[in-house]
Length: 316
Image 1: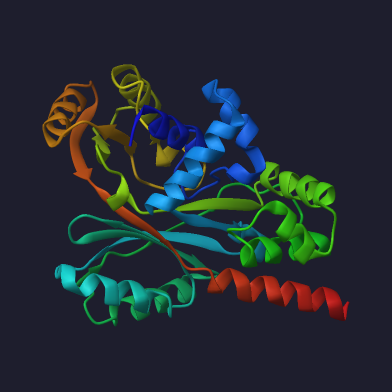
Image 2: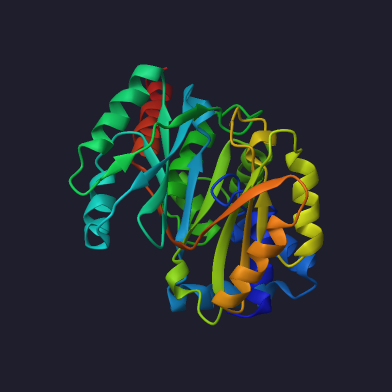
């Protein structure tokens, strides 16, 4: 992967966690190209190459869980035997409410679960712990999803269902499936994105991110450090970073006082050099490095609830 690939990934994330509100290039290839000062055709061609190379496996367009009165729960899952990982990932598809799993090199994965109540979250945690091969699931931290100002109409639910079914198709195909013009479809989709009602999650296989080392640095802070100030210093040191987030300052009720930064680096040696430079920042207590492997998105929970809304609208 070259500098343009890194720039496109950075523009897609817009310095947010990739699975919260990333941009669907079908909707905004022109905006991405403008940010990068390249032709929109260049962006589209590069994304097609990502698909051919197996790095971009597609997009999962999903509604914000707030539309269903739900919250999120985030935690970490440990699978000590790497041979058991694939079985665990398949089994997670059967656990109601599991939304996204970020698999890393090594035993740890990040897991995000939707839940309607503390009891529902506890049941889903118990179901995950019973999966053969799971050695540990740390308690999931309940938190709010990103803000959502949009209200979904009956047409919006049809559009969301079409986006879910036709996630890899051009917008014209999804519009046809929803029974509306491309212009109407695009206008409503853009409004849902602007209102925080829809997330477009790129399903990425980082084992295909070749020619560079992708590293995620979880920068822990001392008690009185301000995450925003540390994040600004990280940006100053590494203006080429792919994305950066301060979970405790996202307005989601997350307690993690860390700075979460991802970078594409030339070698394993550079990973250590970056770690040293981060440790020298005032207010940093420690740095943990993980190497992402792949995002896994589980859509059944969304699909069932979209179908329920469409059924309710039809009855109404």
